[in-house]
Amino acid sequence: MSEEQIKTLEAQFDERILRDEKIEAKDWMPEKYRKTHIRQISQHAHSEIIGMLPEGNWITRAPSLRRKVALLAKVQDEAGHGLYLYSACETLGVSREELYEQLHSGKAKYSSIFNYPTITWADMGAIGWLVDGAAIINQVPLCSTSYGPYARAMVRVCKEESFHQRQGYEIMVKLANGTPEQKEMAQDALNRWWWPSLMMLGPTDAESVHTEQSMKWKLKRKTNDELRQQFIDQTVPQADLIGLTIPDADLKWNEEKGSYDFGEIDWDEFWQVVKGHGPCNKERMDARVNAWQEGEWVRNAAMAYAEKKEKIKEVV
Amino acid sequence: MKKNWPLWEVFVRSKNGLEHRHFGSLHAADAEMALENARDVYTRRSEGVSIWVVESKDITASNPENNGELFEPAQDKVYRHPTFYDLPDEVKHM
Image (spheres, rainbow over the protein chains, first blue to last red):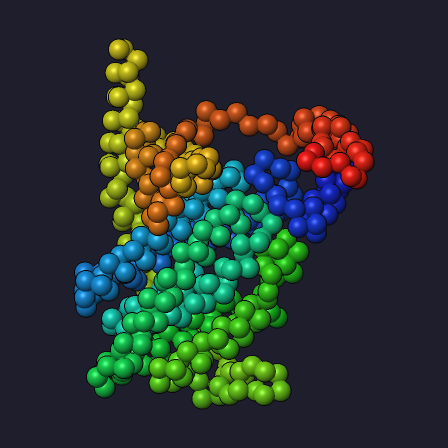
């Protein structure tokens, strides 16, 4: 294709997106659109898969059967969400193998929040309430993103995600209304998860390199700072309601702008964790790679069995 | 020996009376496993009463590049639609 032709196709492509038309897998798309989508969708899928680990940690120790079935269902959903997203990503011409390889080699990233440890049961509450809460704010706008397979996957994810947040908040409600020790445990979890949850919504707009292009492609519909403000404004009253304190001395309602002012985020910590120096980066990656390698014989056996059955069918 | 599980497309009928609709895809070693995985991945919340799986490589799809010759001819055949025909306003039941 000549440069001229590509320019025309690109112009037509931009117009389609402007008209809110969806792009489907076999449609022509600029190489950069494809690459950016593979990066974002796969990061999203990896986050779901790695996200199972911190919570999986507590399944066997859930305090009641009710909590246990809920946590199991939530972790199973995360596996499902990872699979929807990997499938959407594969429609862009990348194989599942390559995607796993990128995750396992560290070439692809996943959400940094999962590199923090889950040390008490209250962390299951804080994760559902805050981490899933922040995730929902991030994900809802993606239901109307321009790439059809991604948008459809996100619709399913968002539908299922709201139970995750509610079950987490319910845990916090119970602990906050429990014994002094239980309330303290809930407050401690909030203290540890609050700032990482704010960081989860991404670097400030001034630092964010992909925002402008992503807005154009509707891969992003609000900036990181807008999403963060929305998260804070909706979460603070939820903490107030159950008598927990947001660990931010500078947090203050600003009557004039109709939202909360908040303190400085420690971006050095964020970048440290992104670069692999968080408390659990190594542990998470080891667990993931180990699961993949230990499962290899099972995948091979299933394939061998399928081939054998196919052969028998041919003979008969 | 290293062979990856093939890709399957999943179609789900959400209730009797409705058609099977494309829900997504997944990897599985064979059809039986594809059905089992589809049940776990796509119907965790009573989304379906029937599942079809078909290996992705067995689907023949039209190419968007041919959309012009395939679909545009229908656009100037407005006489295939009821509104094309002029009838007196008074006419009933038509």
